[in-house]
Each structure stands twice: as structure tokens, then as C-alpha cells.
Amino acid sequence: MKITEVKTFLMMAGAPPDSDGDGTPRAGHSWTTRNWLFVKVYTDGGITGIGECSGWPRVIETAVKDITPLLIGEDPADIERIWQKLLVSTMGNGMTGVVGSGAMNGVDMALWDIKGKALNTPVWNLLGGKMRDKIRMYGHAKSPEQALKLKEMGITAVKTGGVVNPVDQVEEIRKAVGDEMDIMVDAHGPPWFTTKDAIMVGKSLEQFNLLFYEDPVAPENIEALARVQDNVDIPIAAGERHSHIWGVKEIIEREIVDVIQPDTGRIGGISQMKKLAALAEAHGIMVAPHSGSLGPIAEYAAIHVLAAIPNGLILERVEFDVPVRYELVLPHIPTVDGYVQVPDRPGLGVDIDEDVVAAHPSHGNTTLPGTPEDGAYEAGTFDEHLYIQQRFRRQRTMRKI
Image 1: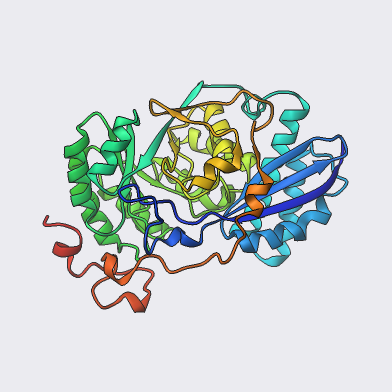
Image 2: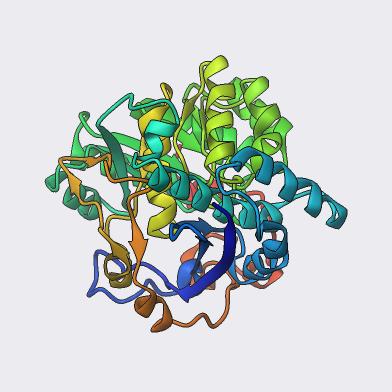
């Protein structure tokens, strides 16, 4: 069997609706320009595989088209050799970042899908078989009302956060949902916390028995993350902004994180996910893939990986996403009592409706996150667009500690 063609399918997804409102996109949300990019790899055996790329989808689409000639005529079963071929072919453009890794991600995912279909077995079986039949998931909430809505649906874990009053948010949500529901805090910027501010917030969050404290500092500053780990008594999670195993190697080997969060669309594919999970296992680190802003194909891939690895922790899911998400994939896996069932169909067990993609053309992929009114930046400084900002008015912007 040989690869004969590679096609890309780019679409505009947009921001998820505000679950407290009428279903309209959240105003000022950085996901208003969210795109999804899918890749299909075709073979002369009549088997087609599907994958997904993230990182910067409109740019990555060009990268996929650029590497396509390297794929034509290859045996899709040679997944690792093809991955290495793509890596060395892109190194001339500089270190392989999210664009190169994102393109390789979609292709690699599609090759695993092809192999599973050819052997009439699910991808999780190719990865060593199932550790579990269902995967625990968590939803997202910015208010007690949203968290209670998730709890009523049977969901047992919720993530909140941001850099605006995160401690107050957690306190209110904890009071609303009780002690039996796990809570996570994502302090993702911009503006990112300084190291001292991240530690201060983390110490204030210790009382709430969190599952993890995510991205407390900018991803480039590994030493800052290490300082937070040393000074805050909460499991630390990070890793979604990195590409391939070399991007997360240091934070795993130094055990700077307790939970590693590879982005299922830009880590480099299922091949890299499996290697990353093994490296993390050797250091007692759990895996919780980042997939909240991604499309449904990446979510399927995350489910297969989590089913097959011993250190799989939990699946991120946007439970109230744009309607097109549920129109796009065949089939959509529902959440039942806080879990998603591991699919048993060959390959990834999913496909997209190409007509739905065509009906949502892409029109931009970058935006400024937030608004001057949302309080993420110090008053009057929004137009400075700072990447990192010290919280001078800590008592107002964080909480009365």
C-alpha cells in the first residue's frame, strides 16, 4: 500500500458560547478566530486516514502542502520512519517549532488511523491495548453557576482560572460544588504572572485541595516554573505550548511538573504522545492532554492515547462548544457521568463531514486576547500588550489575601 494524495481541510470554528448566556460567542474571547485544520492521507489500497493539526492552522496548512511530496509513494505503515523523514526535511528551516510539528502531527495521526483500519483494530490496540474502557474528563467554568451545571451533568472535575481574581473564583466554586468535585486552576496568560506573583497566588490556592495548578508562568521560563514547583504545595501542570518530546524533556526529567499536558494537535502526533507518556511514566508524572481549543479529531486521538498509557490522568473537554463541533464529526462521543467511552472502531474510529468544513471557511487566525474591561491587565495598560505583567494592585486584581 502506498500514499497517493494528501488533502487539507481548513475551517473556522470560532469561540465557544457563553454557557451563562444565550449561546452567542463570548465577547472579546481570544478563540473568536479559532480555526481547525484536518488532514486526510489517501492510499492506493482505498484506505484513508484522518488527522488534525494545531498551533497556527492557517500557516500549518501551507507546511502540510510543502511536505506532501515527501509522502507520496511512501508505505503508510512505516510511521516512525516517515516521522523521522519529515523531521530531518524541515530542520533546514530552523528548529522544528509549532508549525513544523503541527504539520507532522496531522500526518502522523492519519497514518495511525490508516494502520488501524488496515488491521481492522482500534489505534489504542496498536499502542499496547487498553488500560481502561472509559476516560474521565473535565469541563470549564468561570462561575459557580457554570460549575454546578457541569456537576448536574455528572461531571466530576472542573477547570477555572485566568489572571483575574483566580483565588476568589476558586473559593466561590468550591463553596458551590463541595469537596467531592475536583478543581483545577489555569493561570494562562497573557499577561503572564511574574514568578513571585505566581507563587503568591499558588500559596493562596493551597487551601482548596486542587487537582493541579496549570501554567502559572510563561512557558519559556523553565527556571520560574521550577521555583513555583518548589514553593507551592499543589501539583503543577504545564506543557501545552511545547512541540515534540524535546520541547518537554527538561521539565519532565527535572520533575518540574507533576502533570504534563501535551497539545494533541501540535506535539508531533500520536507517535510523540506515546514516547512522551513513557518518559513521564519513568518520572512518576501523569499525562493530561491539552485539547480544549482543538477540534474533535485531536480529541479522538487523545482518547486513544489515554486509553493505552498507565499514567493517563484526565481528558480536557469543552462541553459547551460551538454547534458545528457536533455536526462535523461522525460520530460524536457523548459524556456520560463524567466519562467518555473509548471507541472500538478500527483506526481512530471517526471521520469528518467535508460539507460542514466547506460551509465554514476560514477568515483569519490571530487576535488580541481579552478586552480593556476584563481586568487582565492593570488599568490603563491594555494597549501596551505586555507578555508578562507584575500585579501591582494585588489586593484588587487577585484577592484580599
